[in-house]
Image (cartoon, rainbow, N blue to C red; front, side):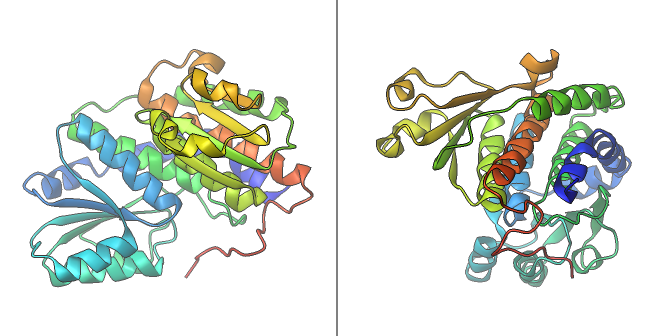
Length: 313
């Protein structure tokens, strides 16, 4: 078994624990966020997708935030008049250079820092006012899987704290197992040259992350979009070598004219799971499996992409 497969399959255990670890910091998080008006949420790669997800959840709670790639935040903050704000920084390793540099720049402007990391003892946690470690465990595969869903569960935990609605998360393990088993049993035609992932609302984050997973694991040119945005120009490049992955939605009718390759992903259909936030989080699991299987179909080692390495220190 490849490490990536093992790490995907471990998520029925890691995801509920990540939520529990986050809500254990509720009081600290609410105290630090309560009085801040300028809130930026930053990350790089998959961690930036996590920052978008948390920003969307906080929008639901009536809290306005701005998600940015860490490198862009770092460029912006040095030239701006922002002071005394808050950054929430996602970094699976806690050692991402762009995220560390952004946190240091924010400190110079008297920002407070909440960091969300996989481990506890890392550079980012040491310069933070609060560190939330979702502790999904070490990943041996380069591609982030359980650490990404851990960060999404941490985002859900923060949202739960803000709205004062902590849920009993234990029952989700059975749904995750069902979703995983169905994803591994499902096979597709992997003879496609490019892929487009489409989502709406919270599922847009799945589209972004699904495209990133397929690109970095199987080396396939992939992009993620809000579903309706794809009709504005991007649709011009669709042909029958393009796979369309619709997440939580039906494939747009207009796109069906140009390709016959479609996959629909929705845990609500797989398990009856009806909570929208948990559906958005668990949607990523079939997309991880898709990336794994597409890599294997192409004879690619899914644990070790040729041009990528994992930040661990």
